[in-house]
Image (tube, rainbow, N blue to C red; front, side, top):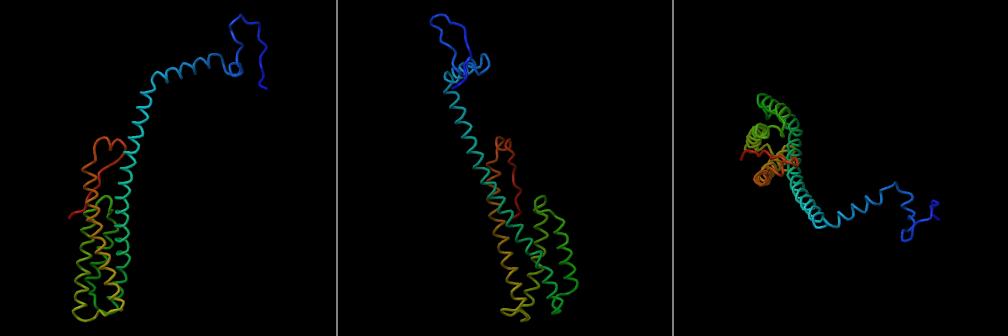
Length: 207
């Protein structure tokens, strides 16, 4: 049983206060009734605003998913670049052991590797990839000379390293092309409304 307050006799036609009217502060019920009445009279506007919010949410969520896809491509690029950087000391070690790699070339490779570590792919993608291209050219010439001399055999360490570098270079080329296509489409569709939600253009790699 809800507690009830003792009330004085009421004139005819006026009902006794309900239990919630006795618990709530004075005027609360009237304010709630006013809000409900306002909501009822403006129901179409309220539904329209809610629908607009849902449309904007789905629109933003769709662009967020596309942005995550581009970010994922970027992470794959970083992964293969990091893997190639980690393999370069192995190339230097095998080159020195077999006396197939000149110290001048080794010094150049290590210098470029050190330089690549100081260049942010996010801030300067073109500069970083130009430096990585120098590595690809040096290694291509190095392995080509070894093949001509017959020093690379199937199953040998150098053979496996060469295959790994070829695979990584192919992946890097494919990822850059795919990334550029997605980034170009993203930048083309990026309007002022999207920038309000924090979306920014992506910088492309040089073709």
